[in-house]
Image (tube, rainbow, N blue to C red; front, side, top):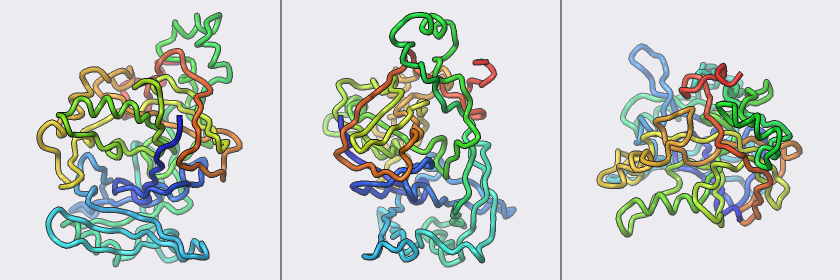
Length: 348
């Protein structure tokens, strides 16, 4: 198997930047989801914006541009608004802005709060004019969010798939042994939903596309992945992937499933809910992909992942060979409080 694509989202919920390689950190790819757009409410409060509820965000495209001397202080995000009708327009957003004079605001995603910086009016007004309502652009800076779901697997996980005493114990648990240890204090994330990385299997995408009319293919970017792996022998085998290693010596721990919502039904060309069969992808997957006990009504596609030891600062590239070095005996159970229907207390 190989990495076929790498996707980085400088601004959460807008279209991704697709580099040929990217530096990995414990918080994800460098610059991934370092910005987020929030809607200004009538009372002045700010509302998180996600594709599922604000599909027009898919009409915004983000590209990272570095100067020739790779001076990050001069780098910028080239943000483009491309409506289905009307002219496109562009704005440059600093990749790493000076936060000295910026207002601090609170952002609470999935019960995991953090501080952020509200960007200057020139950026907020431009985005508001594009979207047709008042928004602000928030920059995360050096802040981060806590991970509330289980993230660490026991070192002897592989014994579960080999049988023996550990396998007999895990068979009596409501979830796999690799999913009973809650997130540790050093597990931090950006504006990404639940984990630093999201890994998907391209072979599984073919299964999704087979559910659409002839000639139609599912756009894999609707699943918002960071790493797309090609060459897997079968679809959905990633449900059991526990540890992944690349030929660039990057190790990822794949700890939980990514459960899906109505964002899969969005038509990215119009920024609106899709029409016809492409607007029913979520329902199509609900027929047989509700395989996670922690979110029994939501289908699964992809695995949330965390960086293994020694990987900080290494570079992952398209074309890197991928080896699955550990597999789970059972599917893991999604357990982020408030999102999942499964409580951490049930596994203790």
